[in-house]
Length: 240
Image (cartoon, rainbow, N blue to C red; front, top):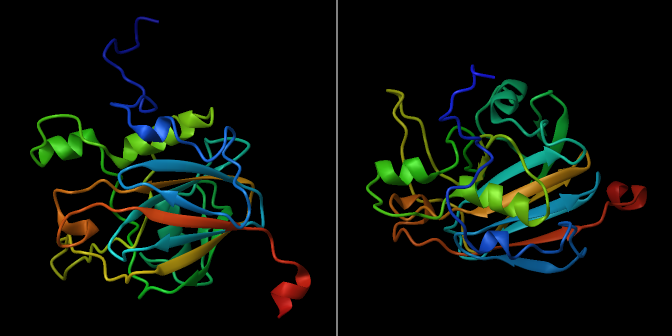
């Protein structure tokens, strides 16, 4: 095995530890349907959904970005892929009614409702320790990549990679010259969106800890999020 780089470090390894490792919603990540959960600022959580269940994600202050991932519950090697979503939709931002697909091009989530102006991001990678170091952080900084790793570890699961997330409420417009803006969200206090699981899935949400550029509001203060899991609709409900 002398071909293995001795300096190789798996991308599944976290760079630091925060409360995401110790505060799962349950040992296996299964939620209590109808219960409103709070996702603390700067932390992550993993939620196991069965096909048909709906997750409602709430932005209590309006200014907080959520990095969101979805993995197939029976194998985390298949996951929601922003590269494939953009090709599937021929757009960079999903709209209500759109399916979000995996790296095997299978729908894993459907965006059912969105009370916000609909400005989200599918281009930007999750923040990580090297990103904060490049911005001038001298010490460990909470980050979405670690929040994903820690939240999965908290329920006994591990992913080998950190896929690009669906950055809910993140406002990164691309200008005519190709430049990317780093702007505060245009979402409002209480805005929410609803996603339906099309497959049994493990969702991970990170209340983004970014406090060095204004993606979490002009004051650069990360804040908490909230979420509720609803059971599948019956045929009668779906028709009403």
